[in-house]
Amino acid sequence: MKLRILILSLVAIFTLSAKAQTAEEVNETIKRMENASTYCNGAPEAFKSFIAKFSTDEEFFKSRLNLPDAELSKYDDILVPENMVAKTPFAKDGDQYYQAWGELQYNKAYLDCGWVDSFVTHTFEFTRGKGGKWYLTHIVPGD
Picture 1 (tube, rainbow, N blue to C red):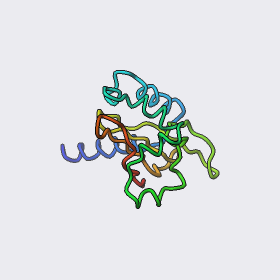
Picture 2 (tube, one colour):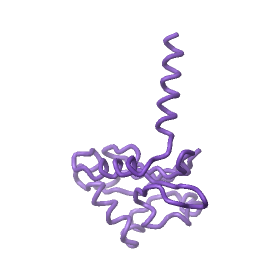
Picture 3 (spheres, helix red, strand yellow):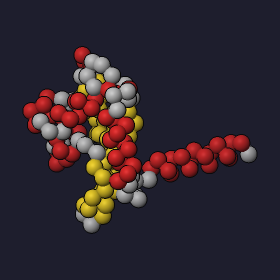
Picture 4 (cartoon, rainbow, N blue to C red):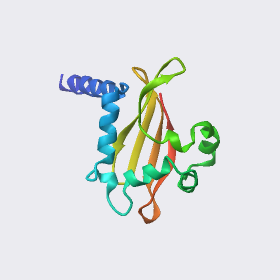
């Protein structure tokens, strides 16, 4: 019985976390990412400073890509600076699309991208590397 309750609880948690974001929820992830006390914003390079420049400066963007060649070619069409920010739901291909900050750790940060009330299409994974600098290191395909 306890195992069944545990399994049902885990399924419920996964289902809730897999649901798409509202504008309010996306804005909350932005506040969390920008908060100076969030682990990813620790020294030597604060993630919030990195992502502000990474999402606006083409040269800096290219210098901080550390992706395998297969991912560079597969995701070439979405690898542009302006795609590296959270976005409240907006119309795309006849449906609502969003991007929200997921888990934020000292050495990892995730930007989840997907369809409202549906599924995540991909996740940008950022990793703190040499010298404490942040890099885009992986694009995880969604469901």
